[in-house]
Length: 182
Image 1 (cartoon, one colour):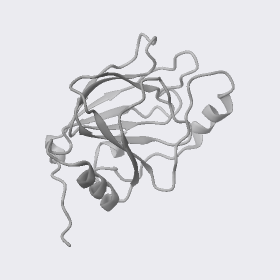
Image 2: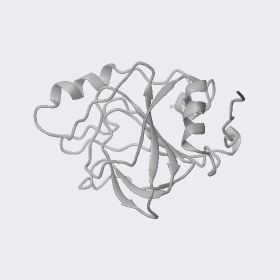
Image 3: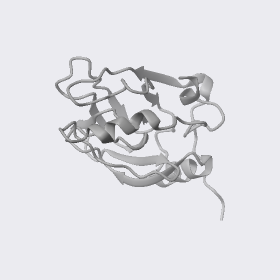
Image 4: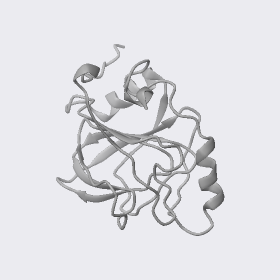
């Protein structure tokens, strides 16, 4: 059986948007590890299927694809892992940093984009622009995710973010890539 190879934008042509989002209320955002939220615009060709994205991520071997779904409409973050969100279909407006945070980021992402979400960065769906917004959610090998909401009682979980390692290879490009330059 032949392996389907994902069509990636060459690194030299990849456009990346990075955000440093300060802590707000009980949302740590990028304040602990100082690693930016990153969007790789059109990393995958827009016609790339979810199964081909999953196969590519598995082949690169940095993260394990764990689900296909939209993004929750409630702000949440993960204290025990970083997250890689590959947009498999649709277009959406997302909120990173908490909806009341004056320094939040509210980008519009679309099929083919990849978002690198550091542990602690609050995120939620604002609007599914054209219906059918779906992502492949992936986490560093051996990791699963927890759910935190910036509520009292999560302080010990948040302290664990400081001890998390960062990527030693880029989840999309492998031995080169934007996650290695931060």
